[in-house]
Length: 203
Image 1: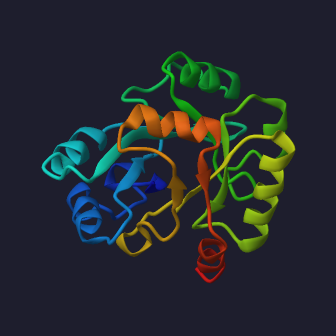
Image 2 (image 1 turned 90 degrees about the horizontal axis):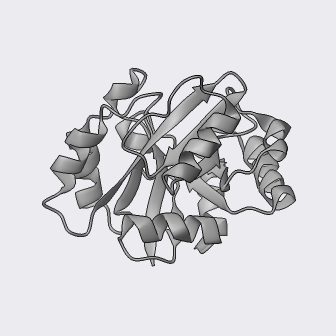
């Protein structure tokens, strides 16, 4: 069992103050969350530096990813070290994720830049049902969306400042192998505790 925060932004997102060094240092100090996905806005520039800084620590794993902005809502793609080709439509991003054996996730569906009920029309791998920046009501609606779509739900802090890192996280039945982690998400071999939801409600 591992614990992962699947939605983190670094300074390469422009609206974040988290440096790669600061992120890795926090993971070193954290008691149990040792896996994070770097999902900067429409860029992968922060991946190389963060992965390099984490490489001396065998218990830390950085999942490469990106948060893609489409004109119909944001999408998290995990497992990619490259950007999809434009134009960035929902269909194109999902096809891209499938082509690399990545994971396409509906990001914060009922918050600003979320796609809401529109997600039901597409074949995503998962829904972000707990987002550290979303309201309790928005997260509850996201949980209902995942149930309606019959796909797994993940948690991500959506951290933009150091204090938010790993504020929410997902339990994953997996080793630290990235391919196995991605497969576990797709299979739904993940869980989010009630305590975690309560923590998010107070954030």
